[in-house]
Image (tube, rainbow, N blue to C red; front, side, top):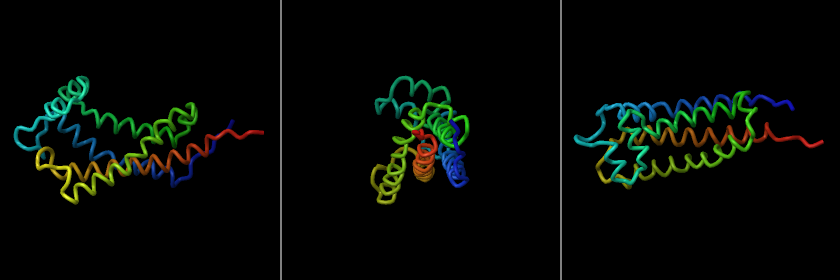
Length: 163
């Protein structure tokens, strides 16, 4: 079975989605490594995770300089590459599509985050500053939209032709 390469617009969309993840992942990694810029005095991310009932593994990662959302951003970048690179076509199609289609829900999540931030809802005045919200909206909308475009292309290109 031969597979076609995705159109260049789809490949560019994947790279744009990856680029949209970089600011968010960089900020979260900086904080996980002990950086304090943009955080209120005394704010501790691991303690915040603990208060919110996060799994012990997530708290442990945060204490050791790994933010789980930054790790998920890397996984999302690899998924976009799998949807657009020849090596991704060797995977059983249900694996990338089974992750990519639910991942498209990050687009409306990003839009909702933006609406809440602009309306003043959802904040409460404590926690990370507003520039994380900008990076998060960019990341969620960017990866969600890119996953939608790339998953649709992958699905069409990986469809078996019955003879």
